Image 1 (cartoon, protein in one colour):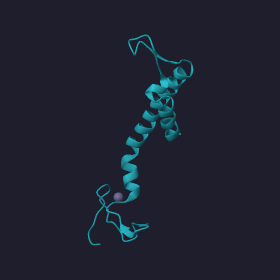
Image 2 (image 1 turned 90 degrees about the vertical axis):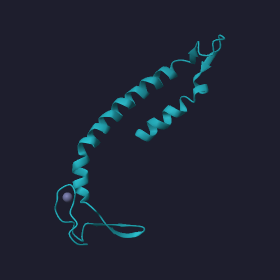
Image 3 (image 1 turned 120 degrees about the horizontal axis):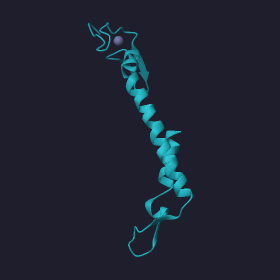
Image 4 (image 1 turned 30 degrees about the vertical axis):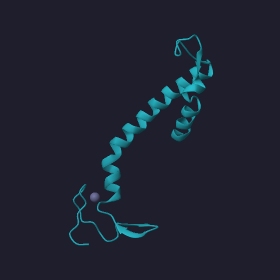
Length: 99
Ligand SMILES: [Zn+2]
């Protein structure tokens, strides 16, 4: 590898800046630590957003636990049960994935 430079810090990529995968060695086109540093603000923002979204889902899960469904949805007097909407399973899957 000759004259390859990290787009984040501008320093040369050394032959030791490699990773090993099950497909074999490959050379990074950048320093992995530079990528992590550059993306840190985005990671922090997404972590904070996940906390807010998790809170909304937990609030919705609480409402579902304390009720049977939606009145007025079917327009014929029948209650639309939460199960008809795929709840609470779908919410629980997301909450589990976020845990
Ligand atoms: Zn770098």
